[in-house]
Structure formats: structure tokens, C-alpha cells
Length: 201
Image (cartoon, rainbow, N blue to C red):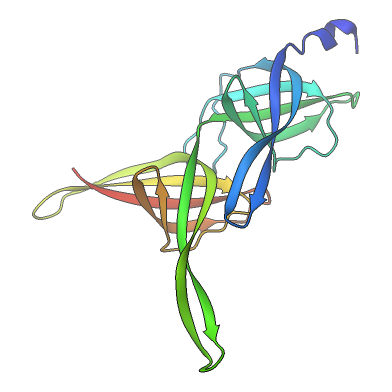
């Protein structure tokens, strides 16, 4: 590669890795990287069941160990990595990413313990688990009901792979509560959960 190509890596981006704790997980800055950044016209379909978002392409010097489990940050914008391709000279990598705005989610779960004396399960105080997710809309459906109309909007929460949600659980995003309906967990790098919130129309 020529010095001209190396000099094109002008933008400063941060590599983010997921930090896991017993009560949740967060994205943490792991390294600063220089990249050449471009914006393809096509949308990035980072979710298999949600709508696409703005696409970002980055070219960086090759970093061994970086995977789609990681993320990036560019000028305060969170980048959800969807493809990492090493170039033929093996000195550089091209990264496809989705420009998204993560939301902080919480879910409360009762802890199940066993009473040793009577050998029966009991529920203890709820434990709160906090995690980041990317939210996108799936579809909007309008139902005419009596005596009032209700708008039901289905969203998709795209989470890091370690985050596991269960059907029927209530996830809080800000001040809004969503019920988990369907989980899509076959992707090796992420999980996707369809969630629903009902509001009076």
C-alpha cells in the first residue's frame, strides 16, 4: 500500500467491546482507530426482521481479533457492525456498519430458590438486568376495536449475543414498557426480539 492510501485514514473512531457484569452489560471503548469513512446510498439491514437504517463503510488497518461481536463509535454515533472483510493484501479491512442509536433496556426477574427444609421453590426479590439494544420498527397495525381504537406497533430489539430474553417478559426502555413476543436467536453474533407496546389511539 502507498503512503497516499495510508493517509486517507483520517477519521478517528473507537472500537467498542461488550463489558459483562452480573447485573447487565455495557459497551466500553477499547481502542482508538483511524479510518477512511464513506456512506453508501443503500440501507443497512442490520436486523433480519426490522427495517433498514443508514449504512456506513469504514476502511482500517487490519485488527486481529475484531469480530461482529464488537461495535464502533464515530463522532458520537454508534455503529453496529454487520460485515468485516480483509482485503487481498491483508493489511487493511473493510467494515460495513449500521448507524444506530442504542437504547438502555432493563428487565426485572424474580430469583427462584429452593427451601432446603421443605424442598419447595420460592420466589425472592426481583433482580434487575440492564443491557444496550438497538431498536427498529417492524410494522404498524391499526385495529378497530370497541369502544376505542388501539394502535399496536411491533418493534425489534437487536441485542448483543449474551443478552437472553424470554417470551412474555416485560422490557423497560426509558419510561415505556414492552412485552417480548418472539425471539430470533440463531444468528451467532446477535439476538433479535419482537416486542409490542399498546397505546390508545
